[in-house]
Image 1 (cartoon, rainbow, N blue to C red):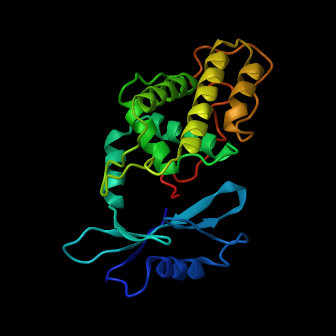
Image 2 (spheres, rainbow, N blue to C red; image 1 turned 120 degrees about the vertical axis):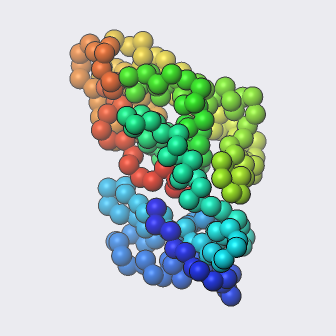
Image 3 (cartoon, helix red, strand yellow; image 1 turned 180 degrees about the horizontal axis):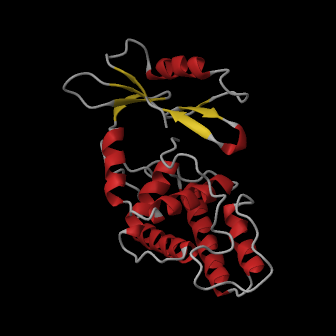
Length: 244
């Protein structure tokens, strides 16, 4: 993520300010940049992307982010990053889990929670489980903890200014679609962990995580492996705080 920060109060609309950033990055890649709700997105080859949220900051006030067709809202990107830095583990297990969840969201044929939401959901879940040496077991446990919390209350609150609920504008259809997808990946995760054959297990994961996750070998799984047949190199490495 590369922020564009203006250190004076804009005399144009938030959408116009985003438009100027869009014009600045247009032509830098072969793919036309996207003018999204909270950022401008540059898209590179191989599914790589860079988000450019647009802020302004004046002395004595919070950072304010430009939101397309809405205006400016308080938002503190530094506070969010510092929160995540405090929560992550030295071994990088949480970072990998965020990557897996974002890869899942990217591969779904429906509108899924943003990278920011996936980061918050995974981090909150990680606080309540024991991180396993195997990433596939940890991912299954995190998914189950996310489901448990969302069944209790369907919300995802940003732990930084403006502390908004990222699920506040979800209608029943979008909410139910996400919960259905969550139930399905949990069901197949349980099956994959019971499956003795690497290839069969990897195919269960690939149903949800996509073909960036390679197939396993047609042989028995190694129970002491850190990664399952599918939870290995190939996960999305794009920014976990991707904007809407």
